[in-house]
Image (tube, rainbow, N blue to C red; front, side, top):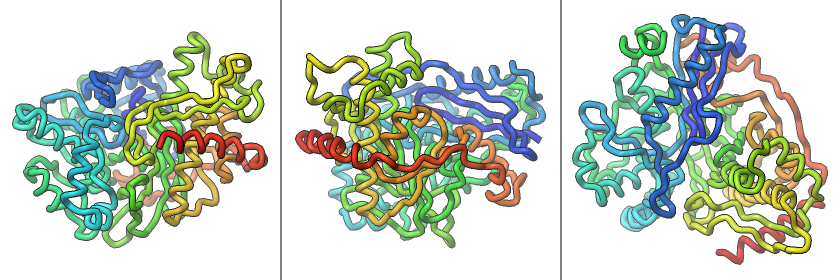
Length: 491
């Protein structure tokens, strides 16, 4: 029996096929190899075409089939992970009415601020556990206000994973976890937030049918079966945002456990059984994949928009043609601190942990007589690590006390330099796993289809590859304090 996992990322779509019994990877691929485009017609705006995600998913699946290691008809269930907070709108014929406004788009910041003032901070933090900010609900309100013709044509709003499930099955569903990440969910009443819906003037008809994360979300249609080779009727049995899914794939399911990623964005995601909210909404709380009314499991998320995107920008502009491995090797030749060069990696929209401000990516203390490309390469990775430390201190001030952080051996966590900077800046060891969002989604589908009796069974083969402990904190701390001083000058 095989399980299919699909991960709809900002940069690419990844697909994995897992053997259910052995949990062995049968095939995996991504499309495209280079980063997918982001449409940005104004500063702070960010859109992508959902049809592009669908096309890239099909192409990634074709690459898996070309490996000739499995038969598509043997896939028993499908799981979907997706970039969080995006807004997808379709009409009654399930046709898109506009591009998706994705997670790093900042246009709805002021819309969310007005909602916070109208609804009141006490209500938002105690019931929604977040400010409406520029999350999905506020993005939808922006469309309602600025594109009334588009809004009028809209039959349902979705998150990106809901759209891919719709393309596979022709059914539109969502989850409490998805609605909470869009800041539609009232955690006190365990229902859609009536005050928020009333304030924004949203009809309840816009909300898809709500189903559990681990449940059937439709079955593959005959047309899709013919297109892909999947068996008609194959169920989609799991949908989750990329960060809850990453936590699942690292077996982070209980209070106190912490996961991290450093892809296009950087995230620390910790679990709690308490209704935690930051007074300034610099970190955000959402329903985790295993959250229930009877047993609260809440994901507390710190997001840094400009991590891998900052590293990609430097590679593209300063080291064209070089691999990330070559860039890392160049950076490693430079001593800790990059000879005083400091980088603020905040050039990818409004940063929640900076109170939804856009300060842009910046380089400070440049010495034209000293600094070369390799200094910039190192300063970028150190700056990203320092941004994690800054955000982690916010999480600590809200009661989280992580003892170890689990991460997949991918993206920036492939860089030994970044790992060194991360553990010594934060003071917290890291456990690295062979992990991928698409494999986590595949195993999630097995839980949803009841192929596995529990998450424990689904992740029984998960073992750490490496444990990295801090050993150079005294060398990194003064450099972090100098970086922090530069950041505060922008605030």
